Image (cartoon, rainbow, N blue to C red; front, side, top):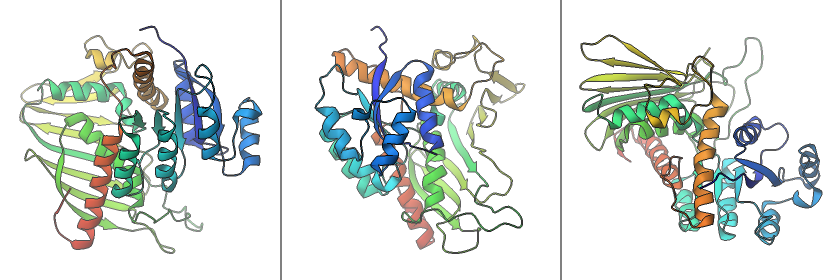
Length: 374
């Protein structure tokens, strides 16, 4: 099937949104899709101003998501967007998924899928089988694809333990300055939703393991007013009897964005760090430590297909983001042309439900002080 540059619209991702800019750059990287419409703010004036900065025609810039959904769906098929990207606060996700799904648009939604598991189930029902991708972009890194391939091939033997950690330090105030603004506590688990869901998804994506029950120790170390918890330490029992440890924190002083995954099996282990994403360390029993590098011919087809530059030229976050979009766009194009949909290799609504179930179990475990089934 020849590759086609698709059209997309955005909800949110306006002035000052760094993640919105990441979406647009990732979509432009492979000419995957071009922006044709948007509602970039709840203020029509700000939305129009930002749309003008992006060189969009005034008629394709809207003051509300409902107006965008209604008018874009009414356009001729050769003009309307192939999909819509949601980059709004979590509390709006359900309503906007329902709006867009009702008009038949495939959707890309920033994680989490929704604020709660109950809302996530409503969103899944609203989709009715329609396409939705969640931007758990770390699953797009080539060396994460390699890690997944090695696990699937059994190179680590029988899986025993998973350790995934995602510490950040941005909530810790600078010395002599007032505290950082509090994150929204509407879900009660803001740091778990913000970074913990990335960690949970990454571990599940690479290993295929499903959490059975959790025991959570939750804290708020940052002082200065009401807080959602900012530090999570979670023990995990998986369905197959394996064990796991998940650490998610935004009050870890000095940390930047240190997402790390370690997978241990009976024959060896894997170790990957997001701040050095172009290498994967493999330690097999009774063998020298192996450092695998992105772009090399010895990697799996899955890993090689996600690289763009020759070995030694670093690739990173935007390329990983672009890989999620490239896979999603292929599925959209196949569906629109009646071709066979390729194997899905992007996070889906079902992944979003799994993450929300995990978050809910963590919250309940913290409150009860006991193991809670996911």
